[in-house]
Image (cartoon, rainbow, N blue to C red):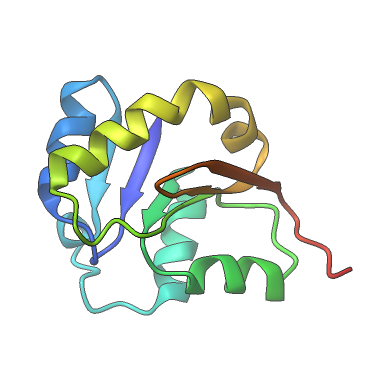
Length: 124
């Protein structure tokens, strides 16, 4: 899978995901460390990458724009985990959500569960 890691995640997360066979870039690799969330989202869509972040703003932008892409993995309550633990959380749950991510989705990983919401997110 192709991922774009946000600034709030360690580049070490990218290293672990790469070692597992995924195509991963960190925003720093693209000189986007100080870029707006909108710019990062546009880059992810253009490169067909799934954003991985602890920042809820990406989900809000996707909903506000009624966007169908890019897919987004939101990592909740991960501030006490090391980079390797975060990467292993993603890898452990990826098979269960790979079809959703390919179709366009917001996926939330937290300590207790995985939630999936397909894109576009229509206000109810």
